Amino acid sequence: MNTFALLMFTLAGTPDIRTPSSADYPPAIRTVLESTQTLRHPRGKRLPLFLWTVQGGVVEDTQLQQRIIQELDERGVAMIASWNPDQRERSLADALRIARIQQEHGLLVCVNATACMYGFFNGDDRTAHVDGNGRPFFDGSIPGGKIGCPFRIEHRYGTVTDQIEGFVSAYQRAGVPLDFVFGDWEIDGPLEINRAWESAKRCAVCRASIAKIDDFREFQKAVRLQRAEATRTCYVKPILARYPNTWVGNYGVYPHDGYRYWFDYFEEFVDYHPYRREQRARYREWFQEFPWTGYTCAMPVVYPWARVYGWYDFANPDYRWFYNTLLVASNAPKHVDPRVPIVPFVHWHTIFDPDPPDASLPQMSEQAYRELLWHMLLRGSDTFFLWCLDSQAAAEIALVHQVWSEALEYADWLEDGEPITFDVPSNEQPIVSGLRRGSHVLVRRTDFDRHHPDPVILRVAGKTLSVPSSPGRCLIVPLESPDR
Image (cartoon, rainbow, N blue to C red):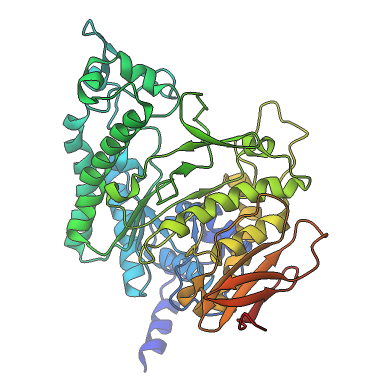
């Protein structure tokens, strides 16, 4: 009797053992599977698609977990484990079970380390600002009320490091790989946002630590360097010391052109923060922290924030969303080392809607969002990381998976091609993005104004590229000599 037949005979004679069915899947996984299709094109060397939702797909049954991971992989979706120091034994057991399955099948081992990163500011007075009379105080302009002095958190390094170290060392002892570790670490650690500068100028420790504290740029630089040191020391180094080839990144940290084109939900504009104006938008100057963090993965945030819509006067409502999000999406690939993977957070539904809702605020159309995703890929994004609410998951997952999976038809171009442009027109002219391989370019053109029917002419590698209108399609177009 062969091995397979013996296994079937054994299972048939053992009523307590059964093959898991899709009915056993957690709701999050059923949502993912119902919103996606198996891949029509091989993924090749392309990174998988990352979906926040799959973190709800952790189960104790190894056989069921393996089936979940395999079904996700058939759709190009990576399984993600989470490290939680408050539930260390349970989360480590879950994470290692997932990692062993991924290792067995040659899949990336991916981890959310967010919970391990929190705790530099824990509300202890030893982390507070200190006024001229020696009294502790915290910055009330930042949600949570725990953000204190950026120069009084070094005693917390050990605690945060241990939280990371405990999981990384366990992975090493278990002999499993660690390929991608990310964090969604935001409201903690040194920050210069909102009215933090005002608090710092009241703080005796900050004044002693920042020689030119009355210059906001010097203040921002000092604070961002402290933030980078904290994460490099406690988060990045413990991982790379054992797994030097791991991609390590964090939400919203990426190389850029010196400006931040978006505000997070907890940030407010303060007029003393240096900025550049465009229409009603105010793009804040932003310190180049990425090189100081030691991160090996760039993670820009490409969201249609509600406040963005009112910044611009474009006649086409979709272009108000598209213009800003493509500015953000183009910023990292234009300035990143090509060896650094770009894994942008993406989202379709309007983020941080006003309360009560504003009826004059339209949702970005599905078509415009699809076009945005295509242009991101053709400008150097290596994949997408979708974050969304559970109530939005089905629609969000379907949209991003459709584009990501269809783009695999051009996997070789996406892997080897060189972006031809990062320009974003400040009016509703045709948008062109493309990847060059030799004498041909994979291009996509999106028109928000029908008054531009003629081909778009670009100079690429000393030659001429003529891009005709081709709604909803990519084209492979030859480069021509400029005298033709």
